[in-house]
Amino acid sequence: MEGVLTTDFVTAALVVVGFVITVILAIYAIRRARKARQRQIDEVGEERVPLAAKPQRPILRAEDVSPEEKPTPPRKETPRPQAEVARPVPPARAPAPDTQDKPAQATPPAAEPEARPVIPEKVRAPEISLPIEKPRKLEVLPKPKARDAAALAPGLARTRAGWVSRLGQLFAGKREIDPALMEEVEKVLLTADIGVRTSQKLLEEIRTSLGKRELSDPKAVWGYLRKRSIDFLRVDAPPVDFARAKPFVLLTIGVNGSGKTTTIGKLAAKLRAEGKSVLLAAGDTFRAAATEQLEIWGNRVGAPVVRGKEGGDPSSVIFDGIKRAGAEHIDVVIADTAGRLHTKTDLMEELQKVRRVAGKALDGAPHETWLVIDATSGQNAIAQAQIFAQAMSVTGIVLTKLDGTAKGGVILGIADQLGIPVRYIGIGERVEDLREFDPEEFVEALFDNADVATEVAC
Image (cartoon, rainbow, N blue to C red):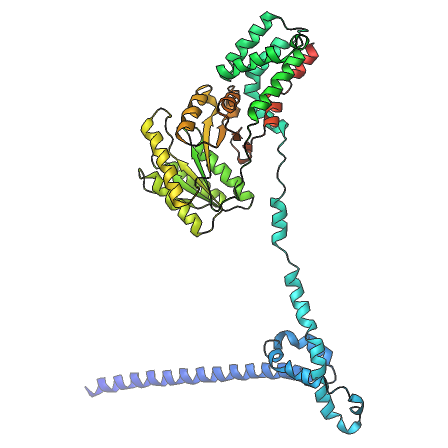
């Protein structure tokens, strides 16, 4: 037992001794580090000793030391120079050799107020001269010109190759128009998806408005068709002003597959490029993956998306979106709705409920209601527009997929029969392919080279 206790005692003693040695070494190391640090401080202090002779080199001290000492001296010493500035009026006595020390201490304060006001100007100047936001605004201001028929023409190639080309072939090589040719023109117009009513209106105006001489001239008839097409499309409506309300609420409606969600995403991208903040309300709660598709666009363009439960009430989603936009000071709210057949009365009544709820969330909302129409539907698009316009106050038309159909002439029938302005047209998959509609540009691209071919043939 004694041997065991002795062994344990020795082990404990060794542990204690080791611990003490470790502590001593640590203390020694700390002291050496402190001494080394003190030497560095002393060396720095020796370099700063000449700065104490401020009276001899006041300008150098103010320029070199002021950035470090600026937080403390300016507030405390600024009143002293002002009081002592009055004393330098009789400084002629200061040069006396007996008073070299005291005047030398009085002169630095007089030099400091002259030097220190100059230093803040040098420091603040770069801060003021960095207008980072101005270049960004300059990038937003220049907008692409509306008249760009050359860029629009490829998207209308199929429509131009349809009824426009057939009319050009009828007029080609004809020096005058006979009754038989007018019958052929009537057939082309009636089958051009313009609509029977608009086609008959055009033919009647051609017969009554043109004289005998002009009526026999293919160039005059062709020119009249172009002029009247522009008149049909130029609906008397003010341009869309997204700044007239905040948030500005835009409601999109249309049948299934018309391209509403894609149009919303492209329009959001354009508005974001103009510097506007945008919120997307996923009101299509019935179509599978409709909300996910909208969220992809929202992430791509930097726009928040308000969504609800699948199969839930779309009105509540749009209501929440408008309220959130108002709270976060967002500029534009674009609300998606579920696609519905224009022949379903109950679904059309649901659209009216969406509009009423939007008005409760914000007075005057929705500020615009746009009907998105698939151009490939042809004359059926006119029937869709008529029924939607009866159920809702449609303020604009967006005609999509013009690049994939020869039935683009339907836009003339919609504008003529309903008097609703066309706001945008889609001629491709890219964001820039959603183009703001311009009647003159559209007609110029639609009739591109058709009348030229007639003129050459004649």
